[in-house]
Image 1 (cartoon, one colour):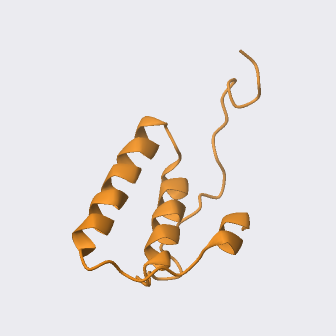
Image 2: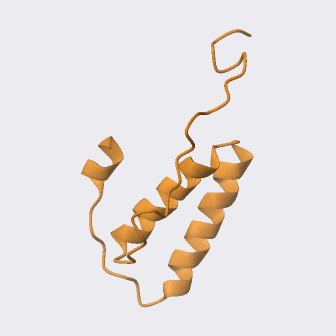
Length: 76
């Protein structure tokens, strides 16, 4: 929710392909960082909305639970 408070509306560039390329590269980076799919979708939605691209309210599907592993619990 903190991210939602930081959202600013930015006018869509004259080159919408640049926005698309940015989103594509951002998604690749987040996948390499092993981010959860719903976190990637949240970031995608946030950036899209900054450029005035409206996505459905249910675009981000948060899982009922996330599987934890020993690394998530600080055990290394």
